[in-house]
Image (cartoon, rainbow, N blue to C red; front, side, top):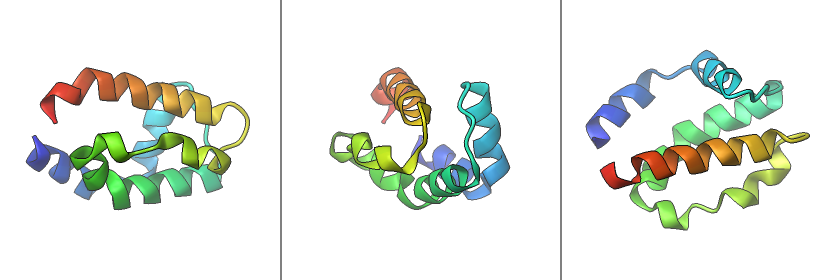
Amino acid sequence: MFGMIDNFMKGITKEDVNKFAKSKNVFLDDDELTFTYDFVKKNYKEMLKNPSLFKIDRYKNKYKGNNFEKIKKVYIEYFSKYQRFL
């Protein structure tokens, strides 16, 4: 599973992140998109290896309006859905 995720993450673009966010009704401004893309590219391996150590709430100040709550909801949804594969 990690190999598939690695291959996907190597090719992911900011536009991919933005399209996914929009599909989940999250509309990121340029700063939010850059932060999200950079964070995911840099930290996805640690998030997958140690999901219990990832504290999403510490990044609340990186988002405006209700974007953080929407992102948190998506994170929880996908983590719950795919946790057994990690």
